[in-house]
Length: 238
Length: 292
Image (cartoon, rainbow over all chains, first blue to last red; front, side):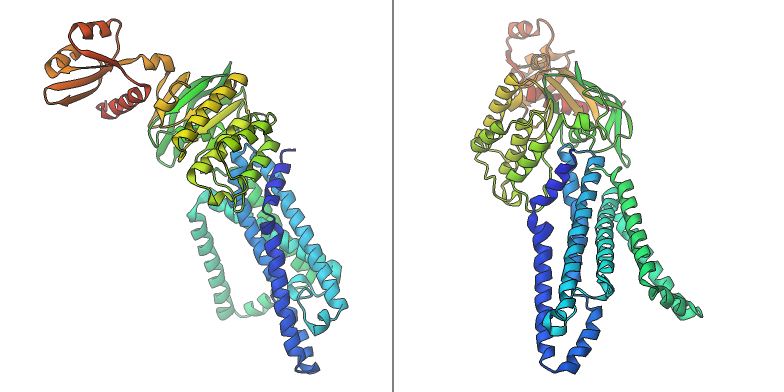
């Protein structure tokens, strides 16, 4: 099982694998606790308003952000070393998939445990929402577990796929991708401004239920993983 | 037995032929020199043979099989490249620990000995190592891997003379105890000329020479003396290089049977040509030759 060495490689820099994400979470949580303490001092009405508003609080991206970078780093830094040490692309892909799955499990469990504690203690006694937010699901704990698992896995594979595409096609990929995204953005904007009912239909899509959203995230993740697996088999180390 | 065999191997990067129709074979259990100027295609050839890049056309067999995505071959192949990048936060200790798990014949005792000999700070982040210390990481990995096929691509960039000597001594000693196939690419040809048994010279992606090192070391002579005498002696000979200073001249020419004796009889001084100078002259002569 030479793929195991890919996992070992990713565990060498424990600060990158676990340290920085956990420090970022702790730092963001500390800020939220401070905000909770300040707002709480202004009375129960302000506290209730804060509790409602914080369901869209994006502080949890302090954790999700570094994980996006983790996908880039895996392909950009670990892939050339793996090939340099005589691992095959298939072995690297197998090992890295396990690393990604492990990350998704560990951090989704962490977030779910955090959310459970947060709810049990009514926002750590300060009525704040850090783990129990829209992006991690405000539903039942199992929904948070599934949503964060899918979200983390998707961003990891997406990061790896983007880096693999850059390694395979160079800067051209970035320009083409940026142009396509700009065109999509322009198309949506044009549709909203010029087409009757387009805005309403778009809103319906964006406010679709939790289940369809999970399917959408899973599809993006699967497409990213598929694209990465295809690209990595033809990626060369310059 | 043949360790490596290529047939019409070609690698294009857009419109540049980095490797152009190369057919070669490297015998097993020998030290081969892979020589050539910058951009000659040495690193590209080694990357092809270790499956890091894909050939545009042609065939290659490494240890009897295709190296591409072949763990059986790659587990027996170690490629030390001067441009190897390491992830952030990696220390020599980490690289060597991972390598230990990848190479079945890894010798940890030898690795420890080499770390001490090269005075490598194994717990310092690789990013903070000097160029020479970074080269030492590759050398230690390449030697301790005891891989049946080891590629060294400019392994000692930045190393001082003492460390380079250490590398040669260890390579020679370990090769004697554990014979294997070594492909050594370097620009310090004279320093390794005694190690090499077979030499391949690449020039603009093509094979210019594939010959026994001993044959090449006796392939040319250098004659020097009065200009008119040197010119008279070399008239009609296969001259590789001519240098004139005032009324004196020095000419490097391909040695023919009896040419040393004839040169001395003509009153000229005769000297051997080092492998490095021979390679330089051959490469320069090829570049200066008119295009047909």
